[in-house]
Amino acid sequence: MDTFRITAAAWMATLALLLAAGTAHAQRVEGDRPEARGVYQAEVPVRSQGADDRARGFARALAEVLGKLTGDRRIAEQPGVASALGRAADLVDGYDYRQDEGVSSTTGAPTYGTTLIVRFDPAGVEDLATVLGLPVWPTPRPKPVLWLAIDDGSGPRLVGLSKADAARAVLDRAIERGFRLGLPAGSAAEQAAVGAIWRGDVGAISRLSSRYNPPMQLIGKLYREGGGWAADWIFVDHGRVLKRWSSDDRRPLQAMAAGADGAADALAARYAKASEPIGEPGRYVVRFTGLEDAGDYMRLSAWLQSQAVVQDIVPRRATAGMVEFELQLATGLPGLRRVADAELLAPAGEGEPLTFDVR
Image (cartoon, rainbow, N blue to C red; front, side):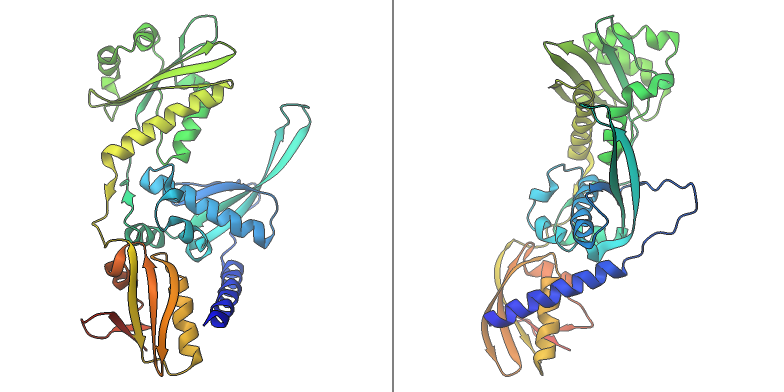
């Protein structure tokens, strides 16, 4: 059995490379700038366009997409997710590369980096979330108004729509977390509300924000503190304070970006809905019958190793035409039943252990 498991692992690695090689590389017209759009796309930096770096990029991109889908920034720590990330290529619908130019913060010299843009199959990602019992933050999502005042030492000023670049760090972080923030127009009356922002006067800002939809506000003030920057945040939904938090960093953009993280956490906690429990995680004995030759055994093993719900496979017993595995299942036997491939497996009775007939 051990020899087979090594052979199967090698076979699966070859299959993963073939799948990655067969994934659609987008065709673009001259002048297009590829970028990720929406919940099911992500972009990640990679060292090269080589197959190994691309495979690692697919995994990181899928983690980002699952984070946007669920609102959970620590999604990779959830049961079953880590193994699913290793098979991210199976869910890729297409990918592209972008060359980014920047400037070194230490030397001022030009820097160049490669970004991998990945588009995942929405249905496949949603099925994965369902199989793993992950909560899903439904779309379309609200676009809260960001009431941000910044004091760099010359007094607090409101960031209105015409000064959007000043809030780019928090606006971009919101997109990374799967939602968008809007900015007030910056009228004279809104500029005069800086004092209310600084005091944390939720009522005053909610009233001022009544002309905008939806009635959600992210209220923040960013200011110098010690040798760095600090920010205080309040997230309001229909007049109700959902969350208050603070952030600090020696870099103002990092302290600012934390506002979007807190807002995403608050929105996901309120609106993300967990799938109906599929089953209890644990180890289960499952029997497979109808295996006629080594090819059937290989097909079955490859299929089991490709399923996110299956976290570990331990052979227990084998006779002519039958094999039993002890499977570590992220969402129990109901989760395995849900993903059972009708072209490969057919249920064989209702007794124990759970039995499938290999077609």
